[in-house]
Length: 111
Image (tube, rainbow, N blue to C red):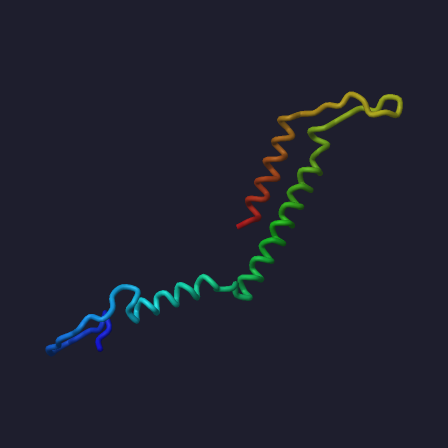
């Protein structure tokens, strides 16, 4: 019996084809490999890296939110009149500027 892909260097032979395609031994091996790859579980290293990535994302998000909240005083202001907050002033340009800084910090921290 000769398998497909067998290298013959010299000689004569008469062969009878019994199976083709996925019915051959190589086809069966291929289907077993494909089936095994579909049921593959994550390795312990991959699980740890996923956990670390999720934790790092949360920490970076919190730091960026904190940076933006620290700078609220620059784009939101008010005055106290008779003990009450009055005359709120909001600067959209400064708000977006400090938001861009927070996003830039997140982009710089992720790689």
